[in-house]
Image (cartoon, rainbow, N blue to C red; front, top):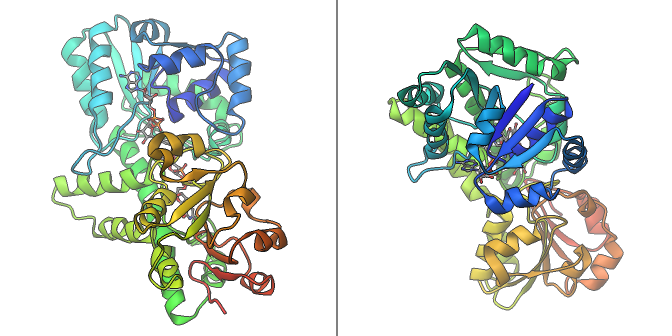
Length: 435
Ligand SMILES: NC(=O)C1=CN([C@@H]2O[C@H](COP(=O)(O)OP(=O)(O)OC[C@H]3O[C@@H](n4cnc5c(N)ncnc54)[C@H](O)[C@@H]3O)[C@@H](O)[C@H]2O)C=CC1
Ligand SMILES: O=C(O)[C@H]1O[C@H](OP(=O)(O)OP(=O)(O)OC[C@H]2O[C@@H](n3ccc(=O)[nH]c3=O)[C@H](O)[C@@H]2O)[C@H](O)[C@@H](O)[C@@H]1O
């Protein structure tokens, strides 16, 4: 099938590449000229495991191409995916200017039947708004479909090629048939394509992200309570997670959720509720608890240094908001960096993928190291913000010998407490009993 993807960020690039991998003829449109030039030269603009291989293969096969021209894109595809940003507006709502701006251009340009597919995360009622916007300018036949994306960064290719479910919101039989034809090959495993109305599809996405953010936040509160009463959150997590009604996943406590979506989506759903006089009290609490969680280790670090971090050298392992991505949007590491440097500490950091992004955002506020041991050399304490695999099994002897003092603050509960005590570290983590 002929497909156009407008917006070549994370979601657009994965969508375009994976649809091409499945034999479709895909054009990706982006207004960022530099990015399009890079992609035309075969350079992939994001780090995402496996995506580079598919990206190269499909460009070489002539199934995946790039342009800055929306008109070229609209001429090409019978299905037009919108994978545009929906950032947080000042009042917490999702800013729809990109989606509705492109809808207006589509309305002015299309001449024959197109299915416009909203893949961005958008509030309930957006499909209707997109339809009205296009209709204002257009006399040609078209349908608008809501098709929220559930991929996780770091596992995006697997999530797209073998989805647990695909949600399609549409009231048009013609669009439903086309979407079914497009996605059928991706659900060979027997997982469902779930058809519903547009509003329910839009809400399914916000409800899913907000539920997951709530699940994590609940565990963070349990962890903080464990710390006070001397229970061990890891034991509690396993005890809870083995109940299949609760499930093992997304119960890991830490220094808060981050990323490009949970923070903004929770706030957007909360605001959408407020707009119709429905108070999502639970989401209000989730936002507040998560904000506090991002810096929960700071007071402990300060205490350790008797209230004075000035001149202390702190090693930092992990900058991305989670492992297997170079994405630093709303990363807890950035909140900790601000706190530490404000208090006069010097931070030496290492991350396998995210350092260029951090450098372009905060410059020389911290020092960047070639490897993990360089970042922990001669430091007064080590802070762990992201659970990259390479941080899970360090050479503790080497680490201890090279640090100025063997003190670790672990925001991701990577190590066994007994092992750390035996190895001679003063070790602090989230919601576990420390001896
Ligand atoms: N990042 C993720 O893991 C996921 C994101 N989403 C949702 O998908 C949507 C897109 O997210 P990302 O891909 O992360 O965004 P992004 O910010 O990484 O990329 C958006 C792209 O759109 C381009 N763009 C902006 N205006 C344009 C225009 N008028 N014409 C053409 N291109 C334009 C930008 O240059 C950029 O390349 C958001 O609504 C997000 O909430 C949903 C699931 C997962
Ligand atoms: O809408 C989106 O953008 C996507 O948001 C999340 O995906 P993502 O942000 O890539 O990352 P997750 O793996 O969900 O992690 C989000 C945050 O929660 C944290 N987390 C996750 C799980 C956990 O048990 N504990 C925990 O603190 C992670 O460290 C990370 O900061 C959802 O998992 C995807 O389904 C969704 O499509």
